[in-house]
Length: 136
Length: 85
Image (cartoon, rainbow over all chains, first blue to last red; front, side):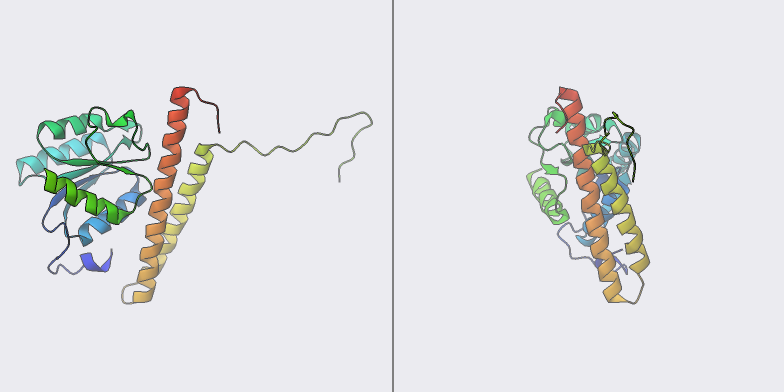
């Protein structure tokens, strides 16, 4: 899509070689975030549009090479993403919520997890990912 | 022009109520149209067009995120039984 992610050349982005799983059910949003994450040098998994698909990708990634961070859309077509947040938390995988809800109760017990309130600047998401991975 | 029968009360036209969900649906429709335009302009080798396409995709995604926000607000409103804004 965008120039920096094409051609297979070396990447020099801020998320160089980091494996990031994107869980987002809105295709238009997922496309933009994919572009930004790839431009930042991330090795992108997903996007997963359902909870089941997200679980499958996360399990596969953890069994094969690990997972550096996850972006979680809180509401996946009516499905709440919290079970996956609990699962990631139990395995020490850092994550960020991306949500239209703001800082509401939809975060469950994960009150320390960063929240990107939609609509957000995708560059801010990359910065937040860097911060959450540095913390973890 | 309509002529009212003697004694009949005029009926004012009322636009259907616009809720956060109708706004969200309109935003999504617009976002999809912008994305379609972006795909048309994303022509390999024509960098100015590709840059325009990239900007259109960016705007479309922000509109889709705003639609998500509207829907979340509406779900919150329904959950807490607040009246429509």
